[in-house]
Length: 276
Image 1 (cartoon, rainbow, N blue to C red):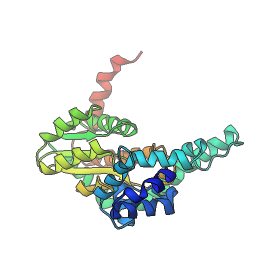
Image 2: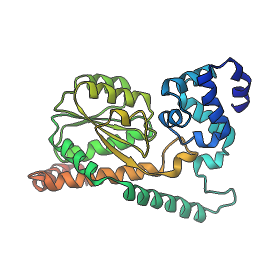
Image 3: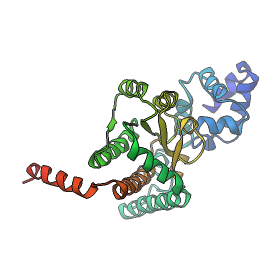
Image 4: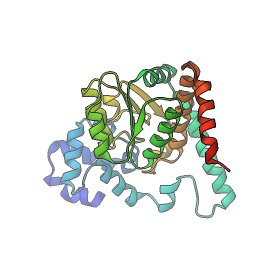
């Protein structure tokens, strides 16, 4: 990828050349920068970064990150940068748990409690709640939907991005969109946030800490703090941190919402027939 950049360099615009200069100086750093972060670092716009990627024959910024990771990162590092080839199963287990605990601690230390409280109040009072997440983040959206349904709240999530867009189109100022994307750069999720924002709905974002295209549309920003984006394209530790934040919001709402305990009892009673 670096060789290709140098080959195509003369054909790029001056603005695109500044992007390439920054990438070539420290390609490893790009892997954990959002498109907005890279644009800010090299004094360009997000549109320039995207144009540069396409001029290099790539589909977009995510394609650039994946390609660079494949070029400069070993397969082992793509799973966990701290794991070594000769590590035993016990050592691997210890490192994975330690990494997860660090992420939880970092996330806890950087959380804004006011944002947690605002998110809980918004979700509890929303007429309709749309949760959107794709890929790894869809598992988080399903967990959140399940918890909100247990609280008797009108929550929906969809795997199909077209369904997500259709639902977002009809949100109102009485509704809430919860957008989940570890990178904050998943195009379909950012598009849903933009549409919901234009409709007057409150947008809550779940992403890794830092500026991203998603945070530009979010009224309430909830961040995880994970180092895994250094090499890994798919979030692992951050998923646990996101679920911890969800549990906090769930518990706050449960404590504030009238008749929560009675609702739980009815759920248990109605689910008894599902067990032996």
